[in-house]
Amino acid sequence: MDFATKAITTSEKPNLSENAPSDVISPIHLSSTFAKPNYNDTIQNFSYSRLSNPTRNNLENKLAVLENAKYAIAYASGQAAECATILGLLESNDEIICFNDIYGGTRRLLSSIFSKFNISVKYIDLTNIENITNSITSKTKAIWLESPTNPLLQICDIKKISQIAQKCNILTIVDNTFATPYLQRPLDLGADIVIHSMTKYINGHSDSIAGAVLLNDDGLYEKLRFTSNSCGMILGAFDSYLNLRGIKTLKVRMEQHCKNALEVARFLQSHKRIKQVIYPGLDSHPQHHLAKEQMNGLFGGIVSIYIDADENQMNVFAKNLDIFILAESLGGVESLFGCPYYMSHGSVDEEIKKQLNITKNLIRLSIGLEDSNDLINALNNALNTI
Ligand SMILES: Cc1ncc(COP(=O)(O)O)c(C=O)c1O
Image (tube, rainbow, N blue to C red; front, side, top):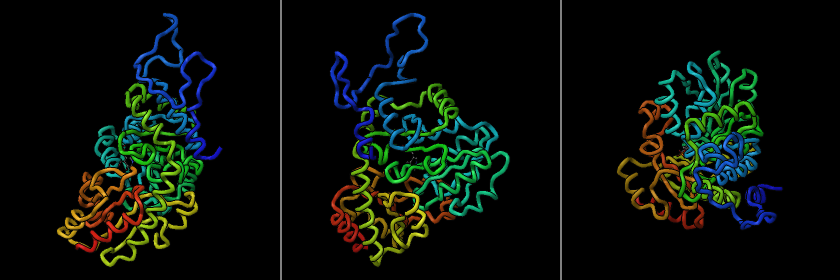
């Protein structure tokens, strides 16, 4: 079966053999607990919803199939998925090598929370493979990356990085939020762990906060399941249902997000108030060829731009931009825009933002599913007011 068929049919087959309603869609199991047949039963499929819930299980099965993974665990947020991964798989005194261009909340989690447990992080530019080999020490236990990155849409060579990591017995952890399993499957490229903020494209409708971890290794899965149950960071039944519903249309949504994004990116390249357009689908993107090889020929729904404007002019642009909503997050059907400097990367140190070129005139556009001509007109009009 191909992607869209799997997205729709996995875990959604009506059960016609039982004397019960044969739901066409997976029902929402709100029960926190499940009756035991005997007082001394210790093993049963469902006992308590923190450990296992039928609606969450259905979502996890679907996610695993789509990401080509043996296992999936759904979490209460992308941050919870990240947290569980580190708590479950790393120990005190371990070190993580992390791409310096990552979501600001991930940097905050690694640097401000896990530093308390003596887990250290080295931030490097992972687009240069040599940097990795020079940075690995006996303490390095994981390489952490996004591709495309948030917010600068840089591309990492997942295959090469995983090969280096594997030789050194180091885990490769890939946040696949921006690409989704429709555009890129890091486990197939050699990564050990995939992380998602399902809040974004997987759910796709800006009405649920959710995360997931996907993997193939039995031992790592057992550690993660144990951690997730012990710490209780799991996804509730209603959000599992929302994500199950959202993921069914992932293919058609991603096709349209990507088509619109490419059209918007091409238009923006020609506007005199735009200093630079960053989009992996443009020939001008420094890693366009790698993105072409590593992704499925589509390049995502995010376009980042540097506007030729001072802070006052940026304010005028933001006030005059129609259709796009100024809001955190991305990946929903509606177009959003944000200034990473103040928003997604607001918690990142000034000095680091300077090094990375996360400036006040950088705007991240999450291109939605509206008609692209309307999005282009809206951007053109707002840019022409400054
Ligand atoms: C790439 C990436 N990873 C992880 C997260 C965190 O996910 P959540 O907001 O679902 O906790 C985000 C949030 O913006 C993100 O952009």
